[in-house]
Image (cartoon, rainbow, N blue to C red; front, side, top):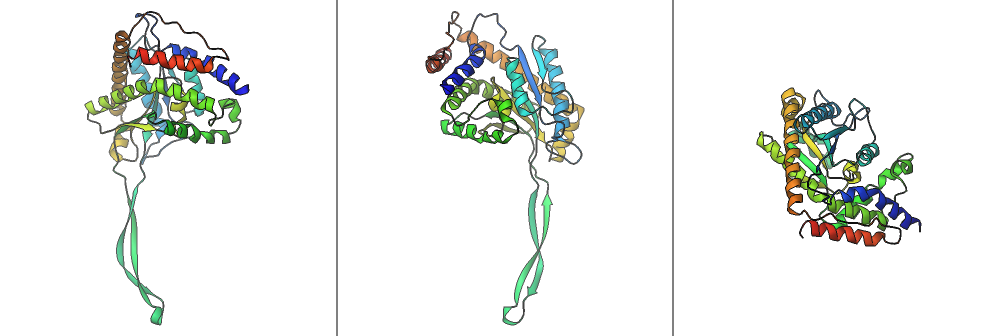
Length: 327
């Protein structure tokens, strides 16, 4: 009974999100609110470069990105998860985006790659005595900077059901956090109800997240950045899994690469990144509008589920989404 009640309450909570996929008139704005998340912050400095930290770069770029979007798409509301050197916990960032019914969640991060280690033969020494005496090589060890550079944009993986279920279980460490029930609610990531709802949400938002991510990487290549492509993450990015909207995490460059670090800290580089992501958002809005116009129908009617019809409602939404997309 408890599980069925939890399922019903969760479904009621996500109803507004599900309804956002349904056309209720051609004059409705497809993107009203965007949440911009500056990664890390406060005590969590993130990755370190030779002279800078990820948290500071993320904040600078996020603020520039928000200002750029407000300038070029003035009818879109921008909400930041942080505007100073503070650390909102991950659950709080996702909760904020969900509470304001955001249409997009964009998390800004900076990448890092570990230095490469190697060794050179420096000669030999002898150890032991008599018949046990043997020749032993001596090495000098060194590290060199990892040459990795460029951008990556992550979405939460959704290509295999078993991988998605693994991803859900991989978030189980959240239960080790203090007062995790207050933060995440009475949720068992291994329960059929939680998995069913998460898979439904993932299916709905996967295509849109992937489209935005691809557009972001395309814009980076236009200005000469090295794109390492769109990547799916099956576990470990709570803000992508917990946000009930299309979500992307943009790795804007490698702080471990001197060239990238200089670019990420420069006014020109930060402005260019903000410009690229803004252009991607504009293209994404155009894509959504074209997609909805091509599939527009008369106003849809959906019955809010009660406790006895939760699973039927899941099937109903899935069927409507397939019909809307013409599949």
